[in-house]
Image (cartoon, rainbow, N blue to C red; front, side, top):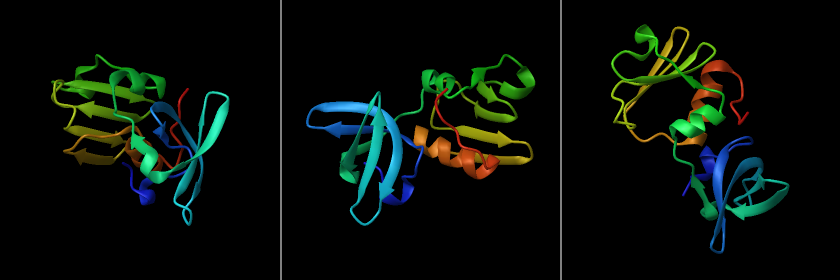
Amino acid sequence: MIRLSEVKKGDIVNARFEDVINTGEVEQVDREEKKALVAHGDQEFWYDIADLTPVPLTWEILEKLGFHSTDDPVIKGTGTAYVRGPFIVQFPETANLHKIHLIYRDEHRDLHEELYVHQLQNHYQSMTNMHLGLE
């Protein structure tokens, strides 16, 4: 489950209705009703916040967000790194997705827990003042 305080317009989340889960983008949040309007495909529906779950961050999702892997040893160090312009998502230990280093120009953030797509989007926006969405 995602906390209501974490959800904002543009976040990519999983939305569940009965036994069907769709991944989509939050279009609007109604904080009083505790609901989010999520668009997936050509459809959009209102979901209770309890029916929203985070999308795990994977290599494939990073590529869909416009990042590309780099072989530059200065950027990736001994692990793996994905780059989008001046923004770097660095995994110092390739096999450990729970240790992440975010870099944007002179700002660095070390994270020591699993990172979900909406959280990466929130970090990206607070560091760059730009929205991170699917390309």
